[in-house]
Length: 356
Ligand SMILES: Nc1ncnc2c1ncn2[C@@H]1O[C@H](COP(=O)(O)OP(=O)(O)OP(=O)(O)O)[C@@H](O)[C@H]1O
Image (cartoon, rainbow, N blue to C red):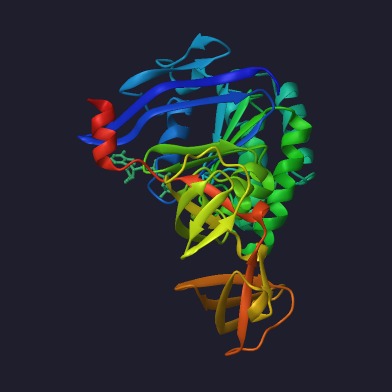
């Protein structure tokens, strides 16, 4: 991992009497593509605005390269923001839009011309200097907004749902392009999205947030394969999440049966949340299954079939490459390595006891 660049320490943020962020701690490294991912209203944009300097925390501090920047205004931070609404100036052409910040800084005409050329090449819009911004497509406008941000040579680019207004195809091609731009620039990207696929496909690090709390920080693979709690498991990808109780290490009581799992470290009799991904469930003959059940529905999704199986008193979501017959009796088998055992969230009573 590269050198630490940004550190958010014990951040609390209130709007009025409403607490939006509580004890947020986050370390962002040089050259990292870090994504804040979570449902609407969880505090992603607020976190980004704190890093950008558009908001001040009520508690805690923000360090950049070891220096406390908590009270620095946005223009004195080595950070630039690309907003969801591109906020381009419609009365200026592309070049004037990109030049705007540089002119305010008093840069020379030659310097500005070179920068514009470089930035347009970077975002794959060479030769668009004199285009009217209102005549550009959404994807092109977004690229101009990125070009305008990168000419300031920020160390960190903050991107607040920059692709959410684009249709799916364009969005996917812009995702690949953004990763490429990031690689060419060699700077840090902090990206906000509520789209889990977007987060998984683009990021080095994903920060999963819910209701002002960081739920998990990890690589895309680790938040998908080893979610630490039911929120992360449910929010990222499809999941079957079932109440279980540890019988002993490597054995969990699940829907009336003792099922082998991998080494968990949870003690005997501890209640846990158990996650099984739909693609990890094996459908077999009824007598070979750990659970026996009936196929209730089969839905073709393009690459996989979504199959609902009623078994063991639970409605399982199973994904398969081949179709199955609705109404048929089948068995379900679970490989130990595909059973993810997670701690149950602390109840409010326990939290209160802990805080006291
Ligand atoms: N300036 C403000 N004044 C009062 N409340 C605000 C303000 N900005 C945001 N909020 C509230 O703070 C909460 C967190 O907002 P924030 O924009 O950080 O969430 P988010 O995770 O980015 O969600 P979204 O994806 O919807 O933008 C929301 O409930 C929002 O209504």
